[in-house]
Image (cartoon, rainbow, N blue to C red; front, side):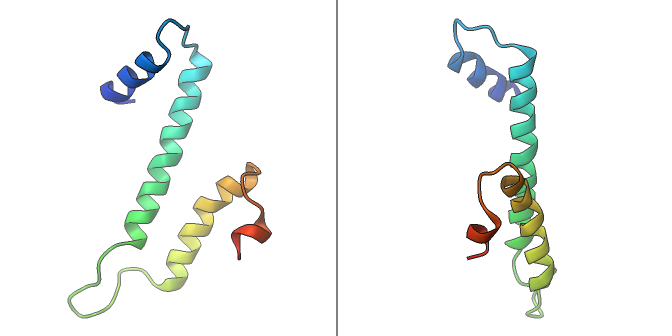
Length: 84
C-alpha cells in the first residue's frame, strides 16, 4: 500500500485498532482495483494510426468477463443481470 493509502486508512480508523485482517482485506481490494484499472486501460486504448485497435472486440469482452467474474462469484451481481 502506498504511504498515502496507509495515511488515509489510519485517519479513517483513528482511535481504532487496525488488525492484520483489515490490512489484508485492504490489500485484496487494492489488488482487485488494480486489475479493474488495468483491464479498463487495455479496453480503452486508443485506435492505431492505421485505424485498427490492439485488441479485438472478443478479446475486450473476455477481459471484461474475467474481471466481472470476481463480482459475480462474490454474489454482487447475478450472471443473468450482468449479461443484460
